[in-house]
Length: 223
Image 1 (spheres, rainbow, N blue to C red):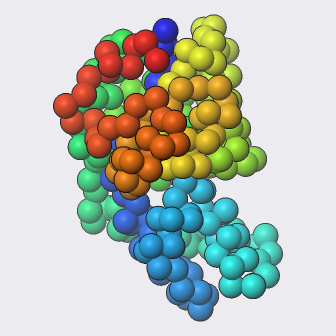
Image 2: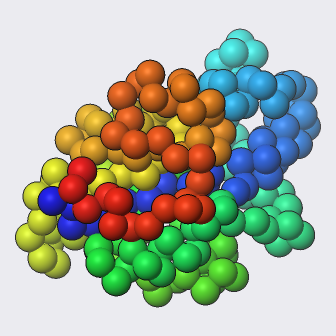
């Protein structure tokens, strides 16, 4: 029986993967490293910012020291915040789904995004008070596909009121996110916002939805 829904953020609640891609392209371009849109969606989607930069530099056969990585993450976040301030779109049906889900389930966010980016978006769409726990990139030592974020969210929920791991259902849009949820022992619903639905079904998702439109939280009660 489902007791809690744990939402990924980028591509699940906020439709902002294009802005993330543009921000990475801009910052990496300053470093002389090209990142195509196809490569971003195929190989970087689901990673946190640090892992994206580490991977981009590895592929370019470039050394990346910690101080440089920290500056790149900050620069990318600055570009992203400018883009999202100019144009913010939520995934279709997400606000309504969250409001409805909060009447039935405990809610959390498990994301590779920075906390300030999550807070910025949630405050603008007036959803900041809907989530019992938020696990952001800074809160765990390893990003998806490692299950650390989902395990941390479960621990936070369980500390407040006991809940079994299998009482948590993840909602994801990336394959690393799917792998992280499954490694944590949770069922995972996939949104086909950034991958073809047939690809997500082939990986064994509990459900695959195009978006939240046309769906109600009660559909997740028995996963």
